[in-house]
Amino acid sequence: MNNISLFEAARLLLHYDNYGILIHRRPDGDAIGSAEGLRLILSALGKKAAILSTDELPSYLRFVPGAGTEKMPEGQKTFVAVDVAESSLLGTFKPLLEGKILLKLDHHCTGEDFARFNYTDETAAAAGEIIYELAGMTETLNKDIAAALYVAIASDTGWFRYSNTTCRTLEIAAELYKAGIDAAFLNSRLFESKELKTVQATAVGVEHTLFLHEGQAAFLCFTAEMQEQGGFSEENLAELSSALREIESVELTAVLKQSRENPEKFKLSTRSKSFFDCSVLCGCFEGGGHLRASGGTVYALSPEEALGKVVAKTEELWN
Image 1 (cartoon, rainbow, N blue to C red):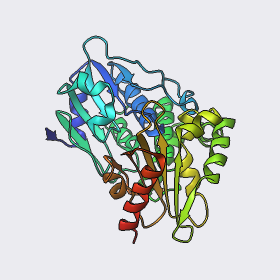
Image 2 (image 1 turned 30 degrees about the vertical axis):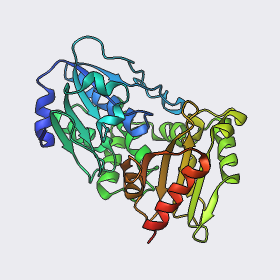
Image 3 (image 1 turned 135 degrees about the horizontal axis):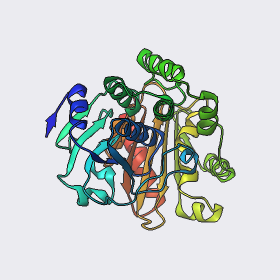
Image 4 (image 1 turned 180 degrees about the horizontal axis):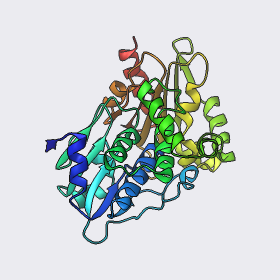
C-alpha cells in the first residue's frame, strides 16, 4: 500500500478511462456528494464513471442530480473509494474487490490504507473538500460539480455548525457559491425536509432515552420491537444521535439500533459537542470515525446488555 499526495492522485486518475466509484454502506451526504462530484470531474475529463453502492440511497439525498447508483460492478472498471475509512465499510463489495481498488480518497482520522494508492487528509472537514481540490487541479469545477460538493461539505459539517468547520471550509463554500449553486434549494432539501415518520421516531426515542452525568450523557437503545411497533425504517432512525445532541445539556449521545435480522447485533451511533472523543468510544466496539461523530457495532444477548456495555465503557472514558 502506498500513500501518495493529492497531486499524484490527480495524475493517477488521468491514466484510466472507466471508473467505479465506491462509497460506504448506509451512504450519507458526504459520501454521495463527494462521489457525484468525482464522477462529474471524471466525465469532464472524458472518462466513464459510475457510483457503486451496496445500499439504497436515503430519500433525502435522491434529489442529487446524478445520485443514481449501480448495485454491482459490471465490466472492467478501475475502482476508487471515496469517504470510506476502512474496507469493512464496503459491505458486500469487500470480498469481490479485495486487492482490486486502485485509489482511496478519505478524511477520517481512523481507518486503514486498503487501496493500492491512498490519500487521507485528516484536516479536511469532509471528503468533499478533497474532491474540491481535485476539481481545482483538473480545472473542471462547474455549477453541477459545485452543487454536489456543497451537499458533501454542508452535510458533514452540519450546515457549517460542527467543530470540524474551518476557515478553509468556509472559503471553499464561498467558491461553490461563486460557481452558481442554488444554496437555498440545497439547504432546504438537506436540512428542512424530513419524513413524518422520522419526526415520530425522534419523539419515541426521546421518551426512552437514559440521561446520566446530570443530563450531559444521553443513551438510547431503539429496539427491534420499537421499530416494528412504530413502523420505522432504518432511515427514520438515522438522525437520532444528532437530534438528541441538540438538547441543551447534552455533551454526548450514544444511540443503539437493534438489528431486526440479528437481534444480538446493535449498530452504535455517537455524537458529541466539545470534549468527549467519540472515535475512542466506538473504537472499543469495532468502529471509529470522527472526534465528534463515530459509529460502531455492539453484540449482546439483549438490548439491556447492549446498552449496559456502552454505558460502562463511557463511564471509563468520561473526563
